[in-house]
Image (cartoon, rainbow, N blue to C red; front, top):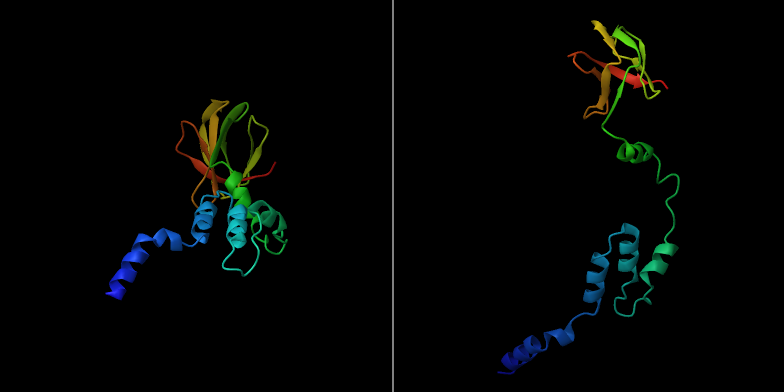
Length: 156
């Protein structure tokens, strides 16, 4: 009987025994910024282990990433900022390309054919081009109105 009474009391007053850290954890979960969220979790006072620190202050106290920790991340950061394709045109007359040809676009960029391919096309004036990145990051130049494409690398 005592056990049943004790169980009923615990169920009825469960909120009274709730851990105050639960609310803090929910607040931290809502933080969008990773550094602020981590600092918020670090600031949660568990028992009396350490005093709580405001999340903003804890984030400011977090050390910046060292150059060694950032090593190799240049390509990842650059990839995020790069578009998958650009469109422009080739200024003037165009009849195709050969291995190693350089193609100057109207936007000022210069691209070199790097796959050894060649194409003889009907003479075009200011043809539109699209340079697309495939899933592996390789860049291909495609001429509008043609089925020909070439692997390219930007020179300028």
